[in-house]
Length: 253
Image (cartoon, rainbow, N blue to C red; front, side, top):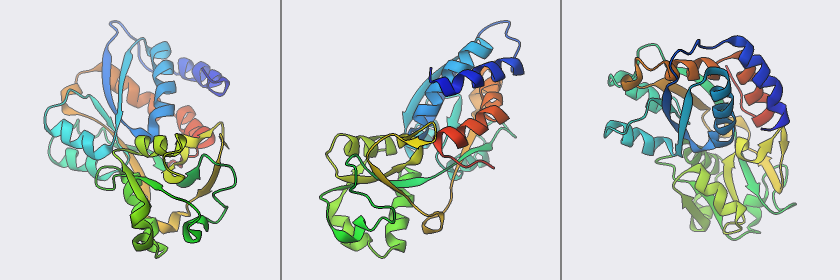
């Protein structure tokens, strides 16, 4: 476990989030941008509560469809607030359980040092081959990428160079593997302990796209699941919220 989370483990243990008589399992659908923090939180969760978190990663739009088709998820950690609100309106959630756990940041990133400049001017220069994005119909970060390119007046020119991943996770893999020279990904995917891990990046200004408001919600099937309640308590605890900001670059409400 990364050292920056050792103190978090101690703090969350002290919270006594749940008094476990019988350990339970919670099945969580996790938006791909939240992969790294979710894995760390799952380890903390098991140590502090005795419950087990089973994580599945993918695009928010895909999870919405799966949930509507009866997929056995207990919690949705979405990359937007639209689909959790839709599930709530459609009667598929535990009333009052929805909240904003993070506000994401979009970044233009290349695994190559020096390719992406601090203003994102590389998009106009044309000094690259392929540009990776997540499917904008399924992934909110993909939609934010398209909105950014439109705001910059570059979408039409860049469209022939786009390669789409099914999720922001796959878009990241395109860039990390070198199959795309650069791509729009989530800041949390390339940042660790507040530092970008490698390559070159431009954090997209917030005024170039709608806020990436990420909501979590307990699904109706988990109304009596103590592990679902305990997970949400951990996620919204001040200690975890602080780590999401300092460690991964999210904003929080």
